[in-house]
Image 1 (cartoon, rainbow, N blue to C red):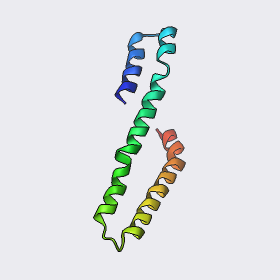
Image 2 (image 1 turned 135 degrees about the horizontal axis):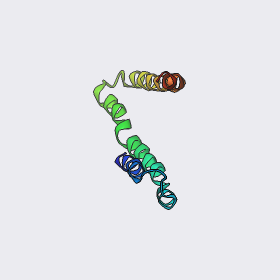
Image 3 (image 1 turned 180 degrees about the vertical axis):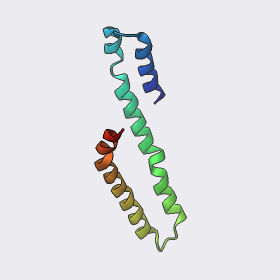
Length: 91
């Protein structure tokens, strides 16, 4: 994410208009930064709650509690995605 911030900082400091050669050479940088962040997050922090869930719960309730936690996670994600456009309009 710091690479993405540095990209936009460079363009802001370059002034208006932005050099088209520089824009073409670094145009891939924001997309690559976001892809690396999403992959890193999915491998790292995104799996931590599910790993802890398996370690903290007793074996007799692990299956049902894991299903409830996963369902809650998916429902929360769906509600967020549905409400996101109205939240952005409110800003």
